[in-house]
Length: 420
Image (cartoon, rainbow, N blue to C red; front, side, top):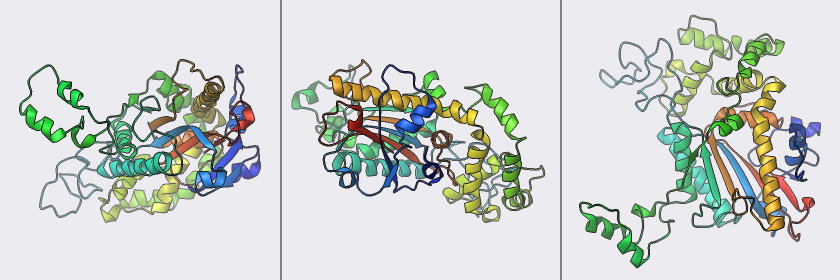
């Protein structure tokens, strides 16, 4: 593994390119995935439009997207603060809703951990960007009209991730992109019961099956296998995680990181937020999460303001120097996903070589879309030794792509490379 690759910081405009070598019918281990699949041997950074850099005829044959949900309300309530009670008084914006004070100028009426309108907008814009790049302009990966054989979307079982996927889908396939009904279908497409004002509704629909031509796209909620791939860091999925959470607090690095914040952001929370107990950079998570959600949604009471650069860093350090500090936790949290990438790309290549499907639908599949969390992104980045200085922001996404080189038949290992 090249040290320069490990130490490099990946900006949004930088991409990594490398060969991929297949290991059919062989057990793959994490170091093989790290070195071979994601290209630490001959990693090269490039920027600009894919086809201009890679050659006009290079073809992307498969992409895996892992995204964090968009902006949301805080996950938990703060002890001693009001969170969700309806506003009382004169609407003065002083952060007082009831008997307790709040850090917000208005309540989170939709509840805790729910996607906000800002989060919906983030993912809609992300989907619009991806439609332009991967459907209309740079790369013709997907069909202009939705094809269920091409796309498979899976979400964690939370409203915020499911709704983020729905919002992004509207960008990928906007209103008006749905397949039209024929005149015969228009007559027959009726449910087996009476509908009030049916003729008026049908007239307004025209040949669109849905109002404004909305294209429904299925979103699957992941089960146990999905949790093992994306939520193995949680003690509810892997009991071993609890053991490492206890161990890390005794490490010198944990103490060092805590010293970094003790006299600035942690001190500000204790003094300005009226927190009596001693905090460390992990136990302050509820406070930093509440702050960031309120700050992003522009509803923060100014007396509770914290330095945003320190908040971005402390949220990142909670992942990289606590949850994923030990190599064992990195392996537990990332190996299943890295193996999924390796196996899936290998199966895709095999389907191109043989012209046959393995029964999973991989032959026609073009996009795997996973809607998940900041911890998901941090686990993946830890697994490929790309830990970041800042938190995985709302709507952060990782794109891992399989490309076939121009002028090749796609029959050999070195006819393909990965890029992310």
